[in-house]
Figure 1: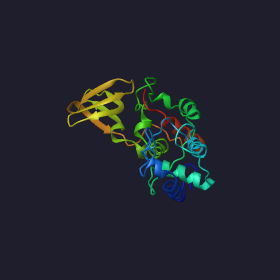
Figure 2: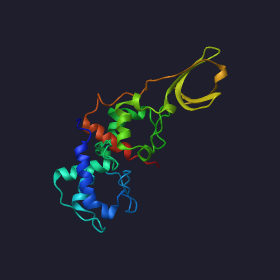
Figure 3: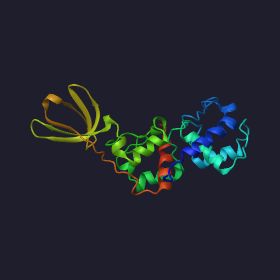
Figure 4: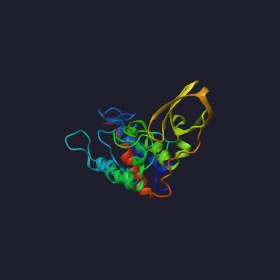
Length: 233
């Protein structure tokens, strides 16, 4: 088992702890407390795994959330169960610290050289401003470690050659039977009529490199935390 994710045993332990200790207040689906949906990973603020452990063990002063004295394996299991989306067969990915993840995104990963966040950065890759709302930790983990396998069809790279021999490369934004719209390499929106093209090819390989070879497991966890913190302006 790789150390970026929890085991199925952890998730099973978490289910037992949640059912006996947490379900009365949070509900069987984790959505009975206002502003929180544990199954969907929605909290009042982004929380790392360590944050979750602290909340569970110390409680939240001024609220009905009491402290719980759990064994280390029970605490890990409860975090794993939440990260797996309450799914015993799910994948529970570890989530680190968003403050450490932000500079990794901007420097070591050079993610900002292609992705746009909160109106800053280029448009050659998908805008990530609210990616934390639409993707789970497991989905984001797959996206950064296996870009080819997790690439959405609409985001596939495009190479088009016009009848006069001009080659246009970019990222597909929209396509119908007769036209295709792309963001080209110069960040311009280009609409092409398919009947006017000599060649039209959708790439299978993502231009995004995997972080698995350059980031440690802890760094990946921190990067995921930062991406989960992106919830729009």
